[in-house]
Length: 399
Image (cartoon, rainbow, N blue to C red; front, side):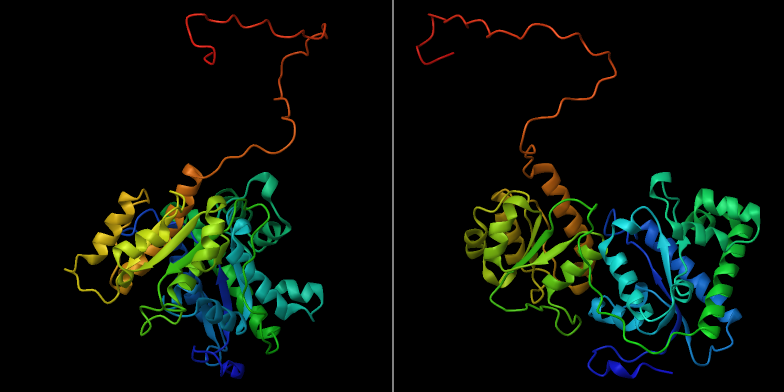
């Protein structure tokens, strides 16, 4: 059975799925290395998909599962995931300390929950199947974590799962038996819920990501320096404007983000991390003039989608920006370079802001530092400081 209300979407309609996997993206350390956490998420998704297929009796009607690793980088990710959340019967969030600080992951959960509004609470909760992916600190434990552990019947397997989290069980061969037991229990629950209590066809609320209150810090500002509105230099391969693509990537990494015009970015940049996407066709002199006065922590990226590899103009623009004091970022031409660079770009902007951005003490009187020493007995009020001697060897205005 397919979801028929996707006619306006640019994504072809898909079949319903047994489960949707949700997780908090990790931050890549380099463009050449795949994020370790995301690699094991992909591995777990493949294993869970295979386990669900082995148990399913409606495999002819439903696909096994979905996660955002299946989405083409150039797709409208927000629309695609909203469509997928509208087609899933069970929501499987991978709980970790970062999951509850990641606005995008929490947005996926709220989007799916919108389909459960008319169900009784007990029935609704059956469609949410949390997994303890990484152990949570004692003060961060949640009722859902208890539900995740209760799914595992064997006490020893449950203890290993609680202590290490499923990611460790997935990675380490010493825990292979425990991992397969937890995997089988998850697949059995997913299939049981999807086949005995399937969700009625319903449209999930549009996926949105709002800043998380304990995430802290100002939103990342993304802007473009170009003459083209909604600039899409990779239009044949990307549905989104490049600024929107950068914003979506940042939000998936847990950074609240705003896409604004250059004038607004100039007003916000003194108090925010910022990324400026520069159209190489603008020219070095015009770029230098347009970005003059922006704080040193603003990270520019020169995009030269139409330039040949040997053309020096994009490097000249990047060199001009570096000479002006901005962080050095090599220009990108091909779409794969841009996609690899984007996660690093947003994390570098955050890093530069934390290193060089304003550090203002809070208003009001400073609170005294706590001390373990016994309080000193009250004494007489201090008098005025002694007069500083005047050095006659220096000028009257020197001290």
